[in-house]
Length: 102
Length: 154
Image 1 (cartoon, rainbow over the protein chains, first blue to last red):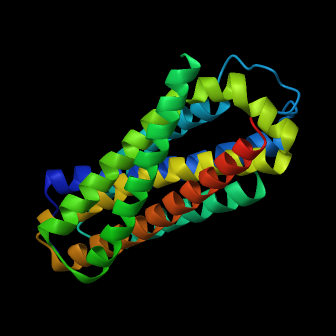
Image 2: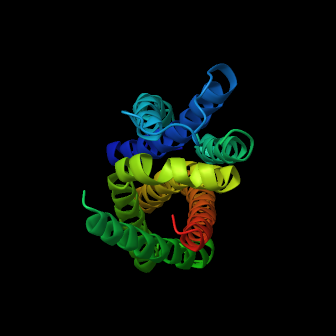
């Protein structure tokens, strides 16, 4: 198996980052719902900060860290079966989070 | 943002969201059948750009949603409120998965190793199917909430 080009590794890293961000988002929301009390949205008149945008930013940061891992992993002269599995895992985690802990 | 501007952005958000969802769905059969075709790449890129534009418009609407709509929505029906929150989570995933599909597709196009090309195509398929599914679910959820909220004059 030949070594991947640098552009190919960067693209694999980007996909890894995206999948990691999705997984991180699902975990963050799950932790929020499980361990922190939230005010009743029907009684909350105004919130200064958006919890959704904050969560998205933290998840994207985690995705950025995951991208470095993806770049490192793609440097090995091996197959990248793990990428499809990682994307599927992130998606399943997000769907479960949306159903169980919206 | 004035109420008229919010209304305009919300309309644009809805239209672009359905266009992006359609593009993601159109790209699916091409991705499942064809290999290394420029059309597949072009449609995937257009879909990723359109869904990102949808997300940007949605982010613009976040502050007006929190200050003017959220409380009324949950007050009228908590189920409807939670449906909208669910839609936000799925939309976030759909955007990132569209970019994951595009980057794996481009990586497969430039890769020299046949085994790795196969793996990257498989990953692109998973990401594209997931992105289209999540985008469709989010678009349907948002339409349901918009219709029911309109009926309740929110």
